[in-house]
Image (cartoon, rainbow, N blue to C red; front, top):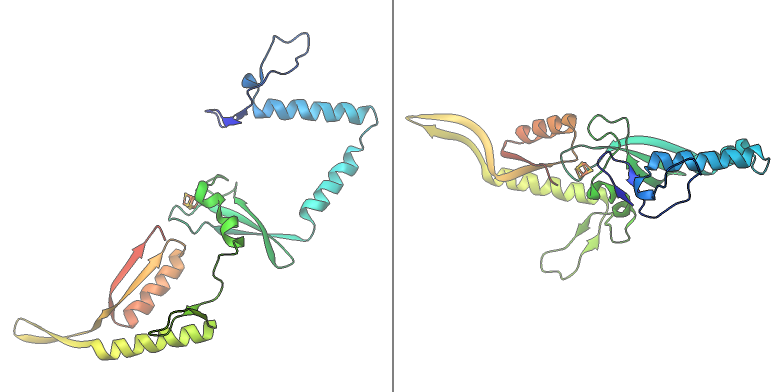
Length: 216
Ligand code: SF4
């Protein structure tokens, strides 16, 4: 199937038509038309008593939606910020799809966004921080508390060792209170509110190099 310019799919095989219709191939049948024909066929079966439509609908809904909670989120692969709907059952993410109500993408996703669920469920995905000791040839899993403590200690040590309290400007020594040894990099998945807080934290630490990389 290929999307035509109007966004509706077409199928390139001949199909049977009623006698009153001119000969048509599926190349000319839009996806909407295809659904109409399928629904018409089901209605025929229902009218002839072969299908209990209400029961089938209820069962399908139950299977698909039972115990599922939906949460809105945004794709973290680039700064376009496409909206997504994440479905969770029993605490586990079971699907991710484009959010039709989102003003940015109206339900569509690019190939990277579509692959987000596969990335989430990949066995190669790292789910814990890792540490490689100086001189060591291997990485070891560590806890988040351990990782945060290590990062905090390194920031403190580097900041103290490289602190610039004042700088000479002309004939005056003026306070600058900064370190040039640490940089801060934001990413595409950060919201405006998170970026605001990161900026505050970075400036409070005395960092001058604060940047953003919208594709990470
Ligand atoms: S990577 Fe694709 S789906 Fe994700 S935000 Fe960017 S354009 Fe949207």
